[in-house]
Length: 111
Image 1 (cartoon, rainbow, N blue to C red):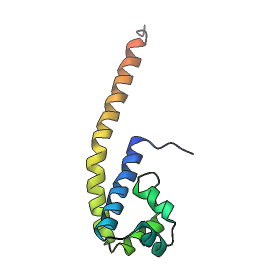
Image 2 (cartoon, rainbow, N blue to C red; image 1 turned 30 degrees about the vertical axis):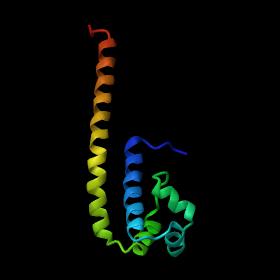
Image 3 (cartoon, rainbow, N blue to C red; image 1 turned 60 degrees about the vertical axis):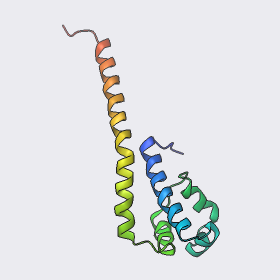
């Protein structure tokens, strides 16, 4: 199984934030939402902790149960995700640049 990088983890955490917040705002249990959406409570719990990425069909069903407009969800999600992921991308680019500089320092000059 592939390990997730920081940006992928941030993606899952952004979905987790929205799902859990909306479910709690509606005062619904994980058991209720999961049963209505046709998934297990354990699966929904893993989504809400950011441990797993939902597939699109199951996410669609959960959003319907939570009375979330799909287009509004994605708009809000993208804004949240991009604001969270941008610092990670910047840091990753700095690390790549530093590694590049270290590699070029060690190379002998071309004759």
